[in-house]
Every structure is written in C-alpha cells, then in structure tokens.
Length: 197
Ligand code: SF4
Image (cartoon, rainbow, N blue to C red; front, side, top):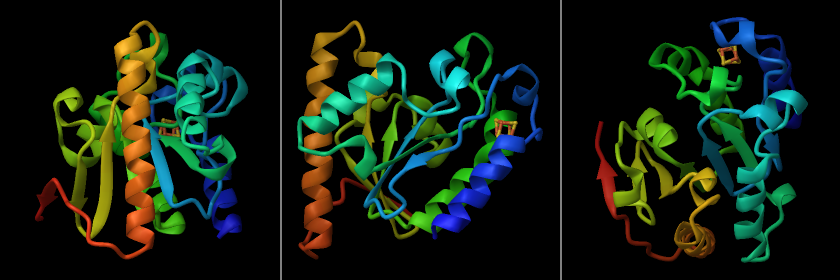
C-alpha cells in the first residue's frame, strides 16, 4: 500500500501534464497515514505548500490541525491531499481542465487508502467530487455516492478571519469523527444526501 502511494508521489513530483507545472515551485502530493479512515481533500496548494512541497502547512493547515487536535486527532493520523497537486498562480481557483487533468492522482489515492469517509474541504473539492455548489449550505452533511461516504465541511482557509467559521469547522470535524466511529462499529448511520449514478 505504502509503495503504491510512493509511486503516485513520484509521478506527481515529476508531472507536467497541465499548465500549472510551468508556474509551480514544487508539486504537492498527498501526505499522511495510508491506513487512515479519513482522507481530507482541499482545493490546491498555496504559497507555503508550493515552497515546501507539502500539503496544508500554511495558516489554513494550522486551522485544520487545531480542529483535529480538538478531537484528539493528530495530522499524522490522517491523510491530507488536494484536488490539484500544483499551486495555481496567485492562488486562483484551478480551472476545470486543470482539475480534470489532475483527478486521476486523487482517484488512485482513494483506491489505495479506501477511506471510510472522504472529508471534502470547501467549494472546489465539493464541485469536483460531487458536482456541488455553496458548501456553506450543505456543510455538516453526510453524502453517499457510488458506495463511498463523503462528509462536507468548509475549507479551513475560510476560518482565518472568521471566528464563527472556526467554531463551525471544529463542530464539523467533531461530527466527522463521531461518524467514523459509528461506521467502524457498523452502527446504522443517517445519510443526508444519496447520489445515484
Ligand atoms: S496540477 Fe496535477 S496534472 Fe497539473 S502538473 Fe500538477 S500534478 Fe500534473
């Protein structure tokens, strides 16, 4: 399992499949525990991530870590990745072409890790993975699509200047791990939205 992820990491590091390869400093493969029950999926690397080649290490990453620590989980216990693995210039939203070109890497990460729940962080991941819009209206909900569970919450970057949203993120992360425990204990869980393809 670990070897397969290492292979993806190598491909991501060397990838020149889209225009973002021309402007990045480093590509940013997913990182974390390959046995994690949860994969967190954000939008794209930012400036700090681009410099270091690691996901969620800037202020938004710190916000996520705090929300995780609040429920006794460390960053090392989970797996964190993004929809696109290279930083879009000036942190613009990745285009549909960039997202589609990069999506195979995420697909493989999910296939290898087989998370109990994929936690969608923010609008771009919501749109890319579930064709959704306005995550603020749907946050806190559990979604099932093609036999995979997804949990929806805001992007940690949204909490940087907004204390109310910090509370929202913490509340959602708490609910997420409660759901993970229930799934593992094979308890009956309430699916809020079910997609049929
Ligand atoms: S964003 Fe994805 S597809 Fe584009 S160059 Fe980076 S790794 Fe390759």
